[in-house]
Length: 423
Image 1 (tube, rainbow, N blue to C red):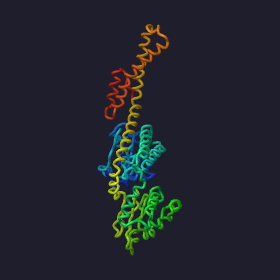
Image 2 (cartoon, rainbow, N blue to C red):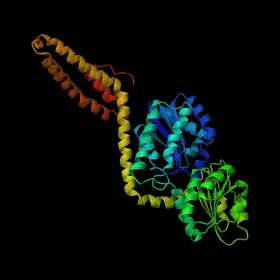
Image 3 (cartoon, helix red, strand yellow):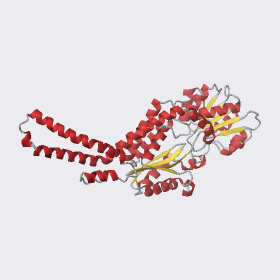
Image 4 (cartoon, helix red, strand yellow):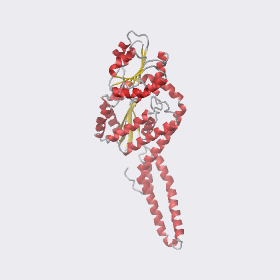
């Protein structure tokens, strides 16, 4: 079975399309059930984040697998297949592995080196396991991705700023508002990104920070940890009216802040309002940015700022890329070794058989040797055979790459007159 990855990401897809394709938690069970009913898909893992929606699968054939994954992605999310024509990409075998390792390392994220993606990759595989959708092929791949992500985080400084979204947005807010010190901020949501937002705004010395969430209990928990004021979403209109800066990062399926709420908030006030929407799907109605005095920035709007920061991190990117290459080599060699294990075992057995046969043929000539001398002769014979087989086996692992259709394995098996085991 081969590994195939198919998906869309922030690189070529619009925020609107990513929102429509994003899998909520309740959508995953249906998607995995649908994948399990497709004979073209053996194992499946769905990775859905704010930057991408990707499906990884173990397949017996590329074209059948590609079509199955495309139908799964489009059909599960109610998107017409033709809408995916431009942004859709696929990766096969080693390229699929390299892509996931890069994703888990934060090298393919809008925020270069973002640490959240490492946990998201791990959680995607855990969920697939819970749905009984994954198996040995994808488990090995996702474990390799987890190991790669950990190495990049510990051996480089690429992920040193976990609140990069907020950091970049705060820079833009500071330029728009003429500074953040003493400003009134509202953070909508009480999850991980909201917590990062509050802490980061505190470092920028904003004045009052209000945390609003659908669950007042969760808002209070975050507020207590960060010295903010808690509230529920019913307070949002009043809070926006008195705020200089709004950061929204909920996991809501629909809009949280509408244009009419923002328009009412801007009546009879002269100072501007900066809104940072870092949620996927978006929390803020896009037309709210057209209200006079309001600047609305979402993930797409942050891209230019984040791209500029990425250029400054070129050296760390190079080191992270080297780590990905190392772990990719480790994964692919191990995978090929497992695939070729029956043939390699048969080759070594053939070598052992030949040594045993030759030792038996010369048993009479060796009879006069002491036991230690006979052991030395046998060790010498087995060592010579092992060394002769070592290089062909190593080269076999290197040359038996995707696309070769096992031609080198078949040739080696034929040369040694060994029946090639079924893959």
